[in-house]
Image (cartoon, rainbow, N blue to C red; front, side):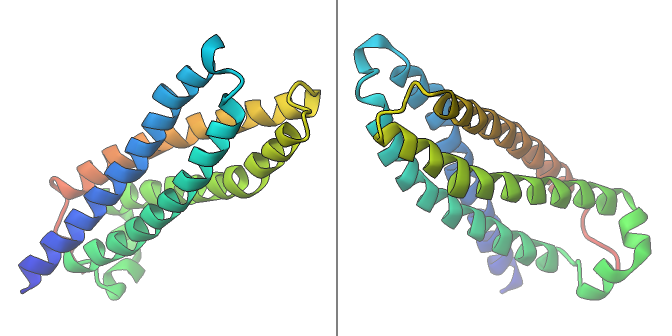
Length: 174
């Protein structure tokens, strides 16, 4: 039974990262590049807003599943609460990797909140008010793009750390 739970937890984790990273990849490499072309420039703000709002819901759901399945994976791979409270664990190679991974995840979550609930909505408000060329609107668009790119790179780093953790450092000893 625990093998089935482990497989389900890992599947949820991988499926969620695919949805989240895949969505970010589509947004940056496909949607934004098409939106910048002359033919779609007039449609771009409305299209980016609608797709961005829809993806925000999907992304936050995927992030929630990632956090929950990540906790489940730790437990199912032998990282009991006692093991995680033991300072020897955090000094071990898997402990150090997990610490870096959790730190990067924290940064991703903070940046996502800033992007999704402050910068993005403020930028869209200015765009809808036909202030798309204002210095404030341009500044917010640049910030949103920078945060999106940084989050994407951080997510790729977290993916590598997750692969490293799952490929040879388990089971945890506690």
